[in-house]
Picture 1 (cartoon, rainbow, N blue to C red):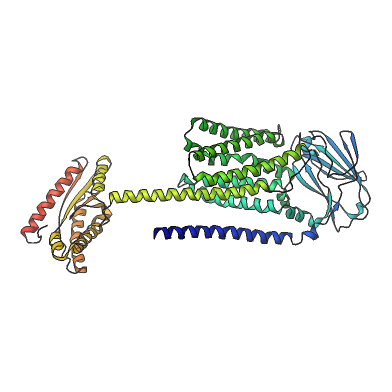
Picture 2 (picture 1 turned 45 degrees about the horizontal axis):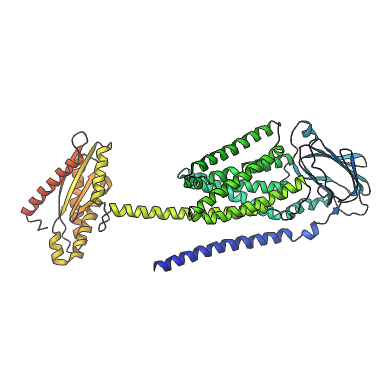
Length: 571
């Protein structure tokens, strides 16, 4: 039976996972189809990729095609001048020239007259100008005229090739960016929304329990990766945010990225109980926090911008990934099976980040871009986020089962099986706590159930058990709200009350008699009666154990009186 239940539960889990994945895939495909349905119409453009005369720091390159043109990595202060004739036969309703700049101020001239300028004022003030697409108004009367584009590089080692330059219709320019970068758009939006929702929920839950710190780290990691994706692939430009603000958000999200993941890994490091690994952990976390703090201060004060410290951030990310991988391998060797799934996710994200990092460095420093697939790191992170959630769920489920099992064992150790009242052990420990605590006044009741042996001999043990259960219900109903009630064994019960008010105790005794009579009236042939004794005291007067003995003696005195009166039979 248990095996069937387990199989059914596993089937349900598998079904819901399949359902969730299928829903995500179908929704994504539908959204992709909706975005790309007009792509063939909106993606029409006038290419301006060839026939350029380019001057880089007074060195002339003639008849250049941008797709194959490479040069030494541009440095701060370098001037790049591009010139060519605009075609005579292009057709647009309202044209826009799309230029992609990388940390460079730009000026655009038509027949010697400047028609657009960006970034020179910020460059002269020592501020960053950012990276991304810029759109220049390009009416039809520019046909056949001479186009000149002047770049002034504002940071060192930022690019070694020029991106394609095209003329689009104004109405289609931003839609093309969104469509061409739809994968980063989907992934980045999902990661940000998921991170925000999960983060808000876990912040509230963290006030109750720190066990959700890991899922909070996942949400912060997701937000950082999502923001970086939206900025790096220029998707966020559709909101008309300035380039320098987009670049700032991109760098900050990237620099913060390793911190939540490092915090997430702490439990895996701690589980190894390796002093060297713990030292390396705190060193790594300190370096990350110190670096982002220093880099932020230097950028804010325009001393050294993020673009100049990016290569050091890449080194920190690589070191972090190597350290995480090492920790996971050691956990795996220690036969901690939960990490197999996690290790697969970590391997996947390492490969994805290495892919994007290699493509970025090749394009930035050599001008070659062999990788056309975009958003790979975001894909890796999204898969990794799902793996983290599943791993967290499995871990929490295991802990919940262990907690339930522990509570069950504790309950069994301190609960009477027949009546579900506390047992003798619990009662004794409770009295010890009272002795050590701050309770000033208390009362101890002892009860002895009459006629149990007669009931067992006459009607059987089932009827005797009913008598015991009925007595337990009456005592619990009468005294349960004032302290604890316990079955001490056989037909004996006890109640320890946190009050020594004699008038209140007498009211309880009166209620006890009423409840016994009501129970006898409700249950046929029950004929329940019990002897009892009680004693009131305080910590200042005597120990509670002595008070218990006094109550027990008084209970036996009461039983003897009941026997003489013919109200109690043999036990």
